[in-house]
Structures are given as C-alpha cells and as structure tokens.
Image (tube, rainbow, N blue to C red; front, side, top):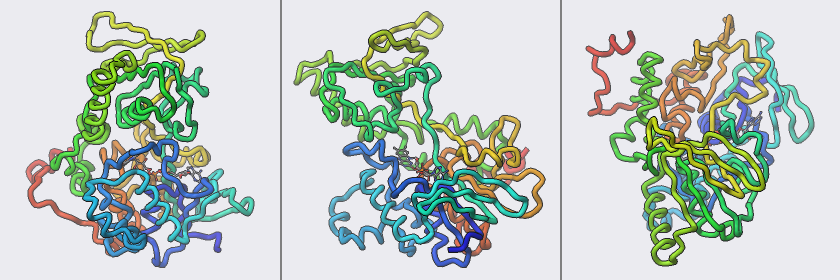
Length: 437
Ligand SMILES: Cc1cc2nc3c(=O)[nH]c(=O)nc-3n(C[C@H](O)[C@H](O)[C@H](O)COP(=O)(O)OP(=O)(O)OC[C@H]3O[C@@H](n4cnc5c(N)ncnc54)[C@H](O)[C@@H]3O)c2cc1C
C-alpha cells in the first residue's frame, strides 16, 4: 500500500465513511484511518430500543448515488431481510441496526484502515505528514489532501469536572460502564434525547432498580424534536446554500432559533416516557421513585458522602431560585461539543479562523490555510454548525456533504449535487443582495 496519498482521512465514522463510499472505484489514492480496533458507532450509548432520528434513506450514499453498493437498501438485500423490513413498516430504524449497516459498509471499503490512530499531522508545505500508529507499528503517510471527521467530545459542565468518577460520568460511556444503580439515588442532568433514553432505561431497571431518579433539564420543559415536513426542509442542500449567503451574525441567530429541529426529544420517546411515568405513579403507586425537574440549571456541585447538586430554577425569573438535590450517582447527559482532534495541534496556526476563533470553511467544507498557495485541501466534516447550518453535525446531509468533497477533489461533474425544491422560496433575487450585505 502506497504511503503517498491524494487524500487521507482522520476518522472512519459515518461522515468519512460516506466520503470513502463515494470515492470507491475512483482514480484517487485514498485511505481513512480510525483508532478503533473495529468499527462501532457510539457504542457507549447503544441503549436497548434506541431509535434513529433520521430516515434510513439518508444513509451514506443514497441521496446522491442510489446505485452505490454501500446503500442501506443494498445492506437489506445482502442480508436477506428486504421483505421483512418492508413489512415491518418502520419509519426509522433502531440505532443498533443502523450501526450494523455502517459496520457492514466499513467492511466493504478497502480504504478503511482500523486500529490506526493518527498521532500527529505536520504540514511540510507540500504534503500533510501523518504519523500513524497502526497494527504494524508506526507509519509515516504523506497526503496531498486531508479530510478530518474525528467526531466531537463530551461536554462536561465546569462544576462537574472535579467529580468525574465511576459515580459521576458522561452518558457517552454509560453502556460500556454498565453501572449498578440498585438502591441508589440517580440524578440525570440534561433534557435532550440522551437524557430521555437514560431515564427510560433507569426506570426500566436496565442497570438495577434505582431508589430514585431525578431528571434535571435546563429547558423549560421536556421539549419535542421538531420532525415535521417544513422543518425538515432546513436539512436540505438548497437551504444550506441559502444559509451560506447570510452574514455570520445572522447565521448564529438562525442556528439558535432552530435548536429544537435537531436537539429535542423524539415525540415517540416522549410518549413512551409519559406512559412509563403514568404506570409508575398511578398503577405501581411508586411516585417517590421519580422527580422531573425542568427549568433547572446545574450551577454547582459538591461531594460529602453523596453528591450535592445546586440548581437554579429559572421559572422564577429574577427571584432567588436556588434549589439543592442529593444523589449517589450523577449521569451527565449534557451533549457533545465541537473540538479538533489533538493530532492537529501542529497545524493549528496554519488554519485560518474568524475573529471568534471559528474555522473558515468554504462551500466544499475546506478550511483556508494561512499563506498557502499550493491548492491543497483540508476538509472538516461535522464541525461547521455556524458556517453551514444545523444539518452539519447530523447524518441528514452526510451523503451530499461527502459528494461536495469528492466533486471538489475530482471535478464538479462526478456527482450531480444540485437538487431543487420547487416551492420553498427562502430568498428571492430581490433579497439576495441584502442577504450577502
Ligand atoms: C448517541 C448518538 C446518536 C446519534 N443519532 C443521530 C441520528 O439519529 N441522526 C443524526 O442525524 N445524527 C445523529 N447523531 C449525530 C451524528 O450523526 C453522529 O455523532 C455521527 O457519528 C458523527 O459522525 P462522525 O463521522 O463525524 O464522527 P464519529 O461517529 O464520532 O466518528 C469519529 C471517528 O474518528 C475516530 N478518530 C478520532 N480521532 C482519531 C485519530 N486521531 N486517529 C484515528 N481515528 C480517530 C474515532 O475513533 C471515531 O471512530 C447521533 C450522535 C450520538 C452521540
């Protein structure tokens, strides 16, 4: 295998898998490196019954290349479950099945190299030099272009950091930790989909029978993900195109307004939760076992025997809303945040950023390299929420995003990435000038 590549990828999660699938059989030397021994998709949150929030047709390839052998339909057919799948009439599939599909696709792609951590990347002015720690020891790889999709890191509230331990941890690890919560008071912090799934599993005694579960959410209530048709139009290439024309400040405002289009709890999960609480309180007469606390922000924590969590009840507005709860176990369902992988540290000063420190990504998701005239491309996938909109950290546009990268490398005709909506007029020629200004 050559150590001179046209394109190297850091990470082989779904975003880079989509690029690899679209580059299959194309005349461009490429390899994607992933540190994991074998493919898995967020194994620490693979909870029983967890469902996808995105249609299985928004897979690695179908929206831009439906005949690609890495499609979800090809997976169904090869695994002899096409008719059973159809007859099950599912709108979305379980995360377990989608992860199995991704692993199946990863196995089909020769360019995916697992057990290979990219330890550092240096720019020698002509190539990116990757120091890869792989199954056969260290390897130096020179790549003309680089595509980074290395995922996000857990968002840990500042006040919880000193207490991280077996009894206070981020939910991203919960399925791997398998905590024994029997007889314990558990505080779940965070009112999004992950918090909801953790609460369901706690109350379903998946990790033993907790004495009490307290669910704290900063949001004003346990709010639904908006999965309705017009909202889904925000997750389209046309919308990204319009979004790109807005000023940076306006983009920030728009992304904030659209929060519940990507961050709420699936309506099916909300119904399941409510029915669970109903059974618990009215049929099992066990109201003491659950406490739902929306509108509360975690402000501080301490540990004396058990954990003391200081909350601020925002429903009270300006009035003093300080409240305290005690817990034996604290599970932080506080989301993920964007972060570049540490291996890119030597490149940091070469990468141009805006005045707020954000990457300046172009339409093809390539960052600007300070003072570089070589034409090399450094792509970042999944990190451009404020440059490309709320679809950016999601799977919805992963095939389209990958096609943008492939077209940028090989020529715009490789994949027809233009799709038109006939009825959503996000802007008109009259307002286009104003948007750019
Ligand atoms: C539990 C969960 C469920 C989600 N469900 C949905 C959903 O239903 N719909 C949706 O649209 N979005 C969903 N998302 C959001 C998003 O689609 C996923 O987070 C997605 O996995 C992001 O893909 P990725 O390839 O960027 O990163 P990841 O899947 O995180 O993969 C990154 C990979 O990079 C590797 N890596 C990192 N650093 C290095 C290095 N230095 N060297 C080599 N390898 C490295 C890691 O090992 C990892 O395999 C979900 C997110 C989570 C956490």
